[in-house]
Amino acid sequence: MTDTTLRRMVGAALILLFTYQATTAVIGLANAAAGGATAVFVAAVTFFCAQRANAGVGNRIWFMIPALLFTVLPLGLEAWSLYRSDTGLFTWIVSFAPLFVGFLIPALLLWLTYAELRKRTMVSKAASEPTRPAL
Image (cartoon, rainbow, N blue to C red; front, side, top):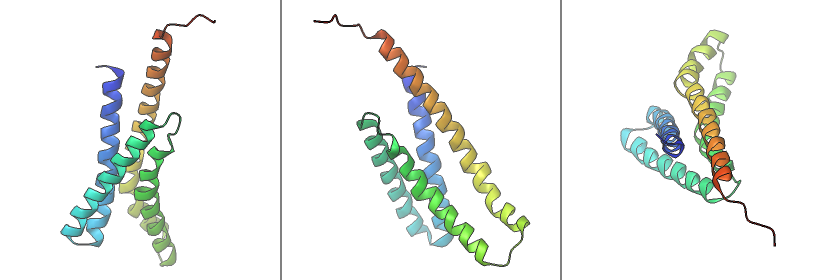
């Protein structure tokens, strides 16, 4: 497979991870219809942000918006809720272990892979372009 295909596969995996995490959180809080609408919303926002990130040269902050919006914000709200209640360290660990094991660690690994593949692709494109003589 080419690096471009691998990069697209990793990007798709990230989109699926974001969609899964946001949908799981919302379904726990609302009914199935609201969860389905949220999944569509999350997918639309994630695809929009991915297109914006790929459209701008050097403007990769768009890749972080879904992570902040659909992961960090709910995580912060959950942490605040646990902080305000009388819970111990074990409850904190049990509450956040699925998030780390099932989402944050895989997403971090995929992001690192994506960045490396992108760097390799950019280096190979720069090496294959012919140099123009100075006028």
